[in-house]
Image (tube, rainbow over all chains, first blue to last red; front, side, top):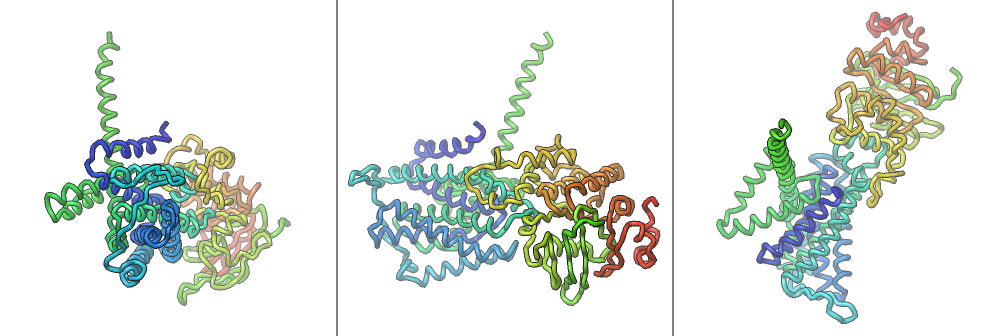
Length: 328
Length: 256
């Protein structure tokens, strides 16, 4: 029961969004960046690695699916898998070099890769379209033997597809986080020196975490490109890495569902505030300050606290109402 | 004293820049003995431990363990050979439960298991037998689900030793296991270390001479990165140069 709580919470979010929201694109975006934030969380919350390289994997996913769908006649699911492979490959390269250092220098290495990737994407116009990005990415419907199984024409139709992919990915990531591997990552996060001293090869553990993170983030990038129909240079920009990190931290680290909360909070707040005030990012700064100062376990931690407080109040109320009866 | 030699270190040197932390240390440790390394602060005891367990690499010299040359193997590889260590400054997984700490340590000798992304560490993957065994040896059964960071200092020191024990090593390296312990816990720790000799070889750094003189089979005295003397406890206690190096009275602190 408790084991599946998070899975049910994720399912609830997926089912509730169409009821409450007008924009299917915004709802899709929440799930897509939820995926990216979960990939980031696996590194930050489970392994203790602060990576600014997530935008690389996101960008790789976007470009890969754009190239395959516009230039090669590959079926869409195959293109998605290819995007995941590219994301994982990018993460393997970045990870393989970055994990040679710890702390500040590790962060600097991921940052350096993010900058380099941006300029490569900017320069390689033949592949990436440079400043213009890749345009007119088709969104082919899902067909089996020529029969359209699931059209992906309207935003809400696409949302349905994203929702299924999201739930499968969420379930798999949950499985990973609870596996022997996930539990060993927690040890690395807590105390790297000891984890090495009791027999674990930190480099291989971190590399595997990186690759899984890259695969998920690549998937998110690909879905994003399909949603918007373009693979813009901004998907490969440092800002994308930063946004994914901020979502992860606001949601709460070390908990996968929290990343979905972080993504939803960030995107819905942005959607609402940007209509009121063009400088809304300033307010997001205040939220980040509040999280960093008072609620380091993020929105999830806040939710847990409130839940516990409600529980206590209910206990007290029930014990008070019972007390007179017991006397009598 | 006729048991075979399990660990042999030959001419171990360690330089930090130009400073020689270890200036050519030779050490032979026999199987199923308690071998203590003592010496004043800064003598290089912990550095020697780092070399022997692979926490840091040597500048020169050779380390043979159980017939293998492990000189250039990193620490996590040496765990597979049967070397486990505890740390002078408690080094646990603070947010994880006592049981999880020990499970991770027990699983460390089969680290390929840690790459399993699918199955949780339950059932036959939980190393339950080893963990239960160590928990009872440490007397921490009732604290199994408590996060390691919430234990008292004495309990954390015991768990620190237990982490090394959970790897079921051939040789267990204990770096000042009693540091900061209350007087009540000392005797228990002494008995505990002595009991390890049945199944393990114990290499011990310890400042408490009462413990060292009581439970050691061999004592190596270090000074300024070199071995000053080696012998049976009573030989060391009456060694003049050791007395001079070690402020004399400290070393006779234990009962005769």
